Length: 403
Image (tube, rainbow, N blue to C red; front, side):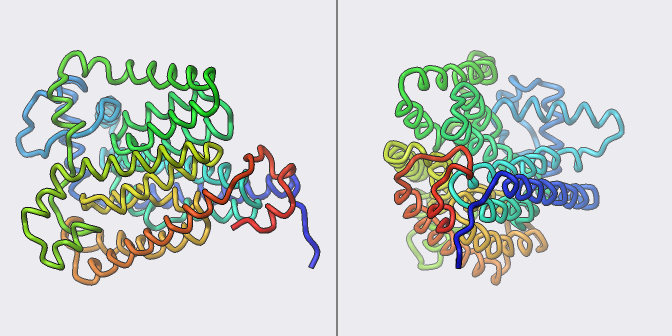
């Protein structure tokens, strides 16, 4: 069988296919958003938005919100919610509006994953990965139905890695990195890895990345840090997640009957140890393979989900797009198994009360995630050569043997 070189025309066709899939995926998400009330979080976000309109996106952190959980979202999310609340004055439904940012992030992420993968594999593989993000049942459920901001934060984190490692645009990468933690604080675990990769690029790269990160960070976080620093720290920086025992290590600990004191520690101060492990892993990988930074970010976020003691269907987003960065098989397997968890979980009586079959599926999804991270890690470590800006210039053997 002859070896075929992929040309620019093949890349354009693959990209067009991914674009069409992303459009179809966005439309599907919007149909769901317009025709379903969504989980309790939709109503909670509406309450947050109304409170922010009264108190402002900075002072909101110091005010008690009767009937609502703690407001644990970074400052940029507050500005977004205030803007969405303003749009309701035009007759638009808030329950639909709140799901637009995540759905739009998925649209962009499908194209982004295609761009990331095509520099490391054949266009056919990149096309499959991009389509996988567009039609992922995990992302369709969490973005089109749930509508939380996790998908937006993850998209910005992957964009920062792509801009820094592939586009050689450190200033823009720094801005994207700051945006990622300004929407939701979860991607903070990848920020040190991004700085290490910038350091490996040389002093000019590091300076420009740091300037973009610090500049945008000061603009978004500065007012709250100056005005309500303690409230911001308590609500956002120290937030450990809910106390449910539905997923991962805390679920296994509950099943095998570990003492309550152990589980309490896992969900309390112990979660900081998880963050440190993820940060350390990201730093090490970024130092060893700076050219594979998108994969490093995907691995770090996936590891955070694997070790996290927080249980929430929307958290499954953390690894969904990144698994396709690590490989098509990893992405599709994760999306299939964990997507079923999301669909059945949202179809139940409550998104935070999983039925017994969903709990078993969740355990299977955790194992699938662990296996995908293991194979993804091997692939990232095995990629010793430079990243090719175009598949036309990639070595022929690399393209044909790509995962």
